[in-house]
Length: 256
Image (cartoon, rainbow, N blue to C red):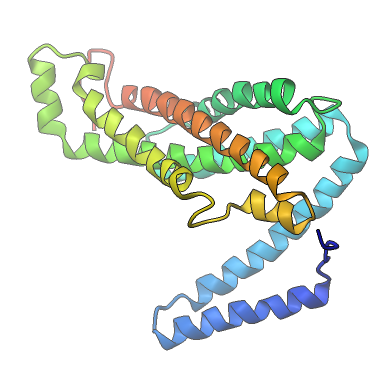
């Protein structure tokens, strides 16, 4: 394995040439994305630099309260982002609680049974793993919630017909809920199908670039993918279970 090559500010300056090329292409194609690309570039630089400095302090401190504080901030931001992508009807505590329950138990199992760091709150393991699974759980919750909400809104006649025939609200929307969960898991399952053949995931490439043995990097990537698909399934099940109830009143009537 070769020596790890660190990137200095000058290297990152040259990296901006890639964004300049993207903006030039967007302008040439008249896509109207120049402003969004500039904003996204600025936010990427600012957010990652802030996170880098913050994590540097947390890593140096290595205190459980500091680590858990970072995790709770990440969880809350993920929940807010997922809620905003669904609709105004969904409640933030539902999304927050669903993501928290879905990732806390599998992540604890991964750390305590599989990885087994010296301390369970070791930021070297807890924070990166949390970041990867939270991002995926957020996206899956958004996809499932948005799909279920849309299907309920566009299928009012079918749902009310089933209610009139004696079905419970859960029975009336069961097929839509199943469809929403399946749709939210498609990106994760597709990535698992072609991982290593078509794409090399970020964690794998990051570890290889940092000098980790490729087989060890592959082992960690396998663990991460198993963790992600499990958490996504739990999260979407909880989100859709809570979300559909908000479309019915106490007398089991559909309220749009």
